[in-house]
Length: 473
Image 1 (cartoon, rainbow, N blue to C red):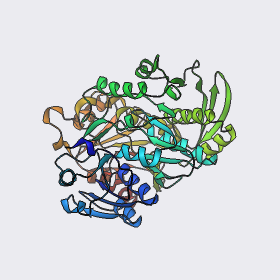
Image 2 (image 1 turned 90 degrees about the horizontal axis):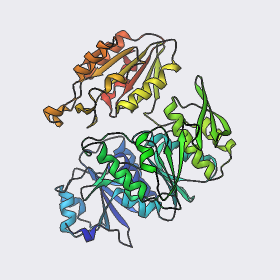
Image 3 (image 1 turned 120 degrees about the vertical axis):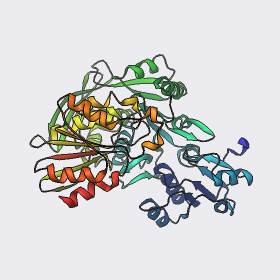
Image 4 (image 1 turned 45 degrees about the vertical axis):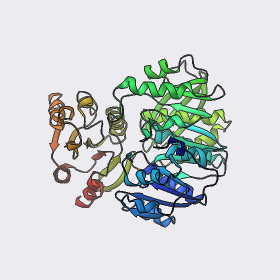
């Protein structure tokens, strides 16, 4: 491969995206189209709603990867991280000697260039933190741009091209492209950054926790001395990583010695009320529909950035109170017969634990029925086998669906959902194992009663279980 062609030419009009239907690639395509570029794209499976959304934007889509999709010789090809070196379009791109780049390289050139970037990184909370910060900036009249990994309900989108000088970017630690196996976040140069925590995840990319820490170490070491890093004070790995850095480091969390600290928290459904301390002194009391301490910590880092920009506490407070959240993050999909069905993206053991813990106090009169589908490359591996049993404690009933794609995982590395259920039963928990989604639905339709909350956790579509359950109820 001619790596000299891994570049973006000066005069670009026509851009083609390989694997355009991914969340980030789709957002990038729409942003480029909004900026006036001619945009085409291809993917292996082109289907609604993403396909309809892209076509509505005036983007020409091709279903399947084929050499002829590049016959019109675009000025630039953006290669998604799901694309392999032997992809027909990747091979044709090289044969035609076309200029190409990765998704984060394109973000840097076309979206972040000339703007001050706020980059949100860490194993958990990136999408929520990015969304909160963007909404605060918007409410402050700063007209921000943003690109995140979920659909913000406030903007009904996962991207925005604003006219202001700020852009909020979710700094994904997943690999960049087949020609660049480093994390995407290494491409961004933040004016301010957030590090929410470091845990092992993405077992298909990273060998172990040290492998992940190495890349976060590179990210932190490259932050400019003129820039600021907000670091979570409750993570030992983060504390070790940020020690003695050239950039300005501000800590946030529950430690009273940190510059930014959560104070008292009270639950007043449907709101959470929380105090914020700055340098040990009261900064403000805020009310928000956000649920759980982990989300308040996400909000705290956004508050710290907003204050650093001299946004008044009253503006921050209004934004937090009106923040609608992100789709698939503790999103109530509906209520039938007094039964609430909630959708959440949680899949890592820590995310599952914090989500279950956060939701339970808001439904004190009924049972919490936790439904979990292990679906990610990490959760389908046995790396978390002995950790998951500790993640469901507040739940009254636990339903575990067997992974649907275990054939992708080597037999000696596979997670056992049956063992998880047995371990939960050994802890005197009511736990059930199901071979497929249909059997989960049958159980829930029979078992759930008025007052219950059915919390469904998966990073996939879960066979549209949410809508199907509501119809059955």
